[in-house]
Length: 72
Image (cartoon, rainbow, N blue to C red; front, side, top):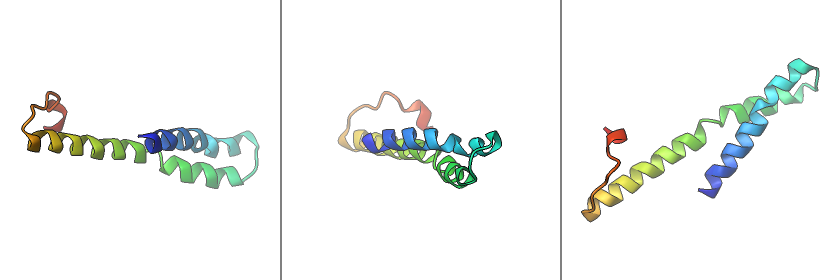
């Protein structure tokens, strides 16, 4: 979870960097912003995978999973 938070913070903050070039800053912001902007969906994918794992653990242990509607 801490890794996901770090990814959200870094990719969100540095992912905006590709807009800095249009404001007249150096060209390296296009590369930095482009790389981190491409990483922005990764934390969401990691959270979905973690949610699937939690759902499977609950179902295999015989416990009731109350939030099964999003997994339909």
